[in-house]
Length: 377
Image (tube, rainbow, N blue to C red; front, top):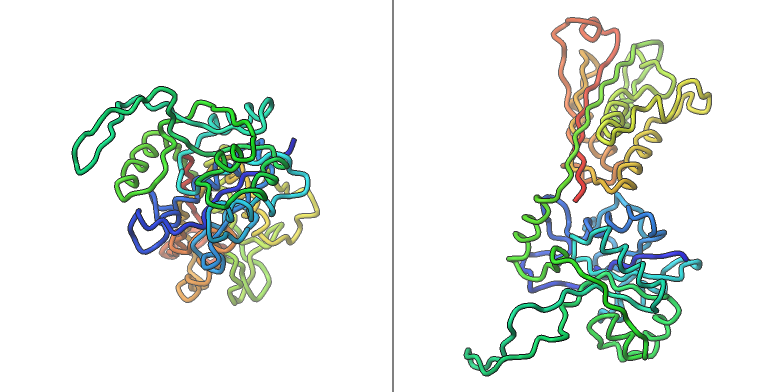
């Protein structure tokens, strides 16, 4: 069976405060929804990720671009948004997981539990048993005790076989609060699987601090560095960080010799423990002769994403006497950001000279050093 994940991110989330819908507010430097998107995209059983967006959000830069997703336009209710997501899945999909964008701490183990339950049930959802004493109250006073036996706190992702869930949505009132309610109204059985106390839904301002604390406790942070050198030869320009810079010489190499982009690419591979450009794109292979270096960079970024990592920031230093880098820095940052799916303020491109010392000081070539930070949580 082929599985798609539908991440519902069309709500406005006003109870969380702030000027942006809660799913786009930053949590440890990234939009809340970016964490769930990355988790599902990295899961080996998920073949497609559908991101359901509010119509006003689609043309904006609020949602992250570093992961390939299918975009669906949300409706006026949650049920309408989910239906739009269901209708956007690929033709070969027969199982779906529906997840709240405001739950950034969903784990691979929880996804596995829901998927396993779908082997024997048409629907499955995670939940946590209620253990606290429950009171009924009125006017600020306790009026009685509510029996907690058999009560659960519902979570997502909620998983279903696609065909019966589509039929259930077609017959629904559109007012149900989640897909379990839609499924049960249509007579479908939904299995309960063990939820996760850390799989919290961000609803109020206080939830941001709680989520950040949980993430810091279980965060995987990696750093990698890259270094590259190319010598000058005949030509009238150099490629640096994706920008063609006029110069009286060109950098020589098997590809386009973009020394900055090469250093950043190697830094990503290094952080992943995946070698260097030469291992992935051997210079002995003629198909890479004169290749644009963004091919290598995009491959490294995709490898990081598929491994469950997001790129937090990039710092690249170009070492040369000439050409002068300052006039081109903003363009270089913009190009690198576009190829990496990052905001340009997460990328630093700067330059220094070697005070006329060494091969760079003698203007025999250009060197580049780069550091990249990857995060998985």
